[in-house]
Image 1 (cartoon, rainbow, N blue to C red):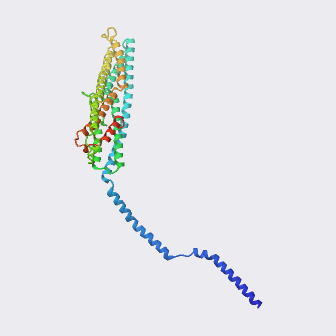
Image 2 (tube, rainbow, N blue to C red):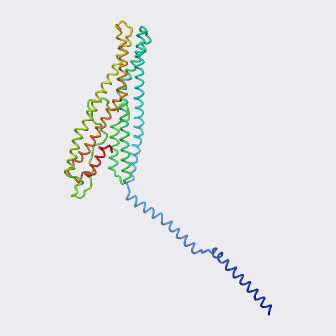
Length: 384
């Protein structure tokens, strides 16, 4: 009996230990359980999503293409933008180059002239040395030729033209970027930007020979760098609003036009005419003085040099020519003339922009009155 109890208790304890061991090992077995049916269902769902997502993406892109800008119009605008960026860089580089021309030629011509005057004086003191006379005369002749060329092309005015062109092309670049960023540009925008580029190319040409602007025109005219003004048609709105226009506003704008024409534009044209007249006088006086100095230098010590007038002409003529050259090109009179001409053109642009709106009798087809006045005031304050 005792043997049965001992065996039962041993088997009971071993059964309990096995039960406990099985209970402890249950999580390990559960974690290793695989459900092939569930995994297969998940794989089928993923496969179905991969098949459906490209269809959805293509549908969304197609809808965006239908509602977005015309790709051809955008391509043309980006091509114009790239051309404008190239022109900005070219005008900037050429402006720097021609400004360097002005400084270099001014220094070179004054050095030649003063050296020639010094040699003419030495030749007179040394009793008419032939070497000194020939050197002085050759230098004066070279200075006369260089002055004639420099006065014809006016490097300071050329540099100012290129600076204006770079600034205006930069404004045009910003306008194109604004049109692109706002979205939905049209073929009319492409045409407008292209016309502005061509107008700027005509107003400020890059080549020096054959296309250079006239530096001494018969009449001073404002610079024109914009195409023909066209009214932008506005969408019909509420007739009671009159598109932001009223009698008081229209009268105010007409008074502004009168001030622009009588005061601002005319004042700048008068100042430009004065600068042009001064530049003409200096451009003629410089080569004339160096030419007379060359004649005086050649006659130093000759029988004709009775009383020493030849050496006086050579020395004084050279000194005066240096002063004239310094005033003309050191003072950059040509640049001042171009600045006045450009300012007159700016006010002419404002005048034409206002007139193009006032000529339209239908108020709903004009630009919005309040926005138009705000834009013009911004331009008048230097915001354009």
